Image (tube, rainbow, N blue to C red; front, side, top):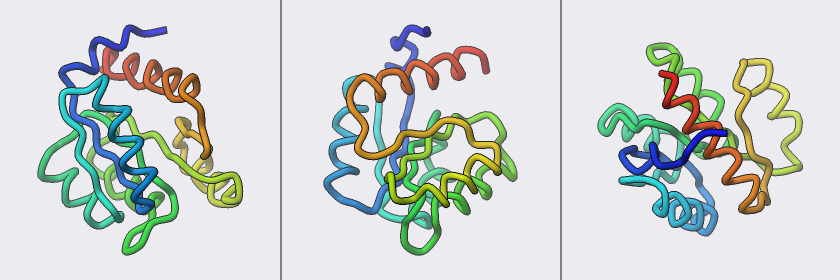
Length: 131
């Protein structure tokens, strides 16, 4: 697996409408990244993505104004390389099927533990090293 030190120079975007989950995820990412920006819905996430050009993204699937799948599709129209990690709840399996069909392979199912989180960061770091 990849070394996480590459993330020290990177900007992460967290798109999550649940305030507690957003804050916890941002705090965790702050240990590894240069900067973490937060969005409470898909439209805000898209604006921040265009403005800040984050190196990787963690996005919830279900969000107001623009859902995570639509956000990812809009980003992929112009950007095929930025790693995007989908976060979703167990009860949203039907949505995850749509995510997989759209060829997004990196995802975490809430609630996830620190080991799953670190493993996903290693996948992100490896993608960033290879791009």
